[in-house]
Length: 306
Image (cartoon, rainbow, N blue to C red; front, side, top):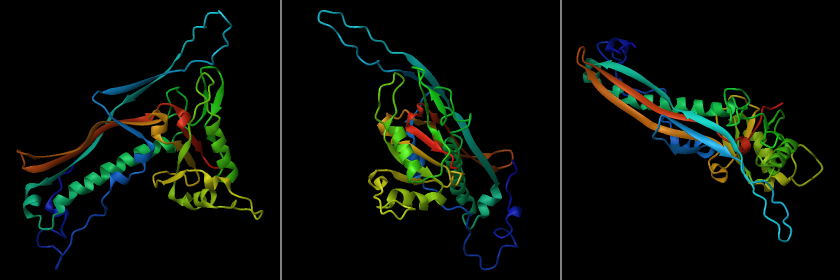
């Protein structure tokens, strides 16, 4: 790691300083994490351990009839799959000389902390968006060990896929709603999971508006009512979604008890500063620890586009 010295910044320090210099600016606008898309899509929990685990169980099967005077059948549940969340540490450091700190007339050094904070938050954004970007690959799996978006085998041996390859349109959106309406638990009992958010690259906002916002069916002259306009679904535009025709639909985390997309915060963003006595340079470090991933796939649906 190279120490930053005044000679690296001739526009600000020394005899080469720009004449009539008024403002020093960074190519980084403040990043407001409170408005980050992931805040809507993930269930966030605190962690005090090095790892976190989730383990699943099926519900009971359907109830059999009981004849007069007959004993009730004993019902049982089945243990399902485990999911381990291993916290990862992220961070970076920067170092400046004592002379840079002393001679900094334009708050260049002070602004570095804000720039580092933005870098950290953006790094986290990209990592979380990759849960969506890579949901159909083996790098992102649900508790059953399958790709988050794939064909899943239930405990009762039935199969269900939450991955399609169609562009967003009226027909494909209706198929998505039908998918959520037909979801069952691992015993085949119907469950209520409603789609809430459609996450997209901003380039798709126009298509989403046409499909879900039009009172009449788009792309047709038949004057039919667009039933999708009556559905409550919220677009989430996320620039870190890399595929401009892919779209993902998720349930509200609260509606699935936070058991779909999950974040464990082990340690929040922390910045430390200290002087190294051997050369009196100031060393700054920013770091954080967390884990993220998916438990149950049922609150997630992805189309890679056509």
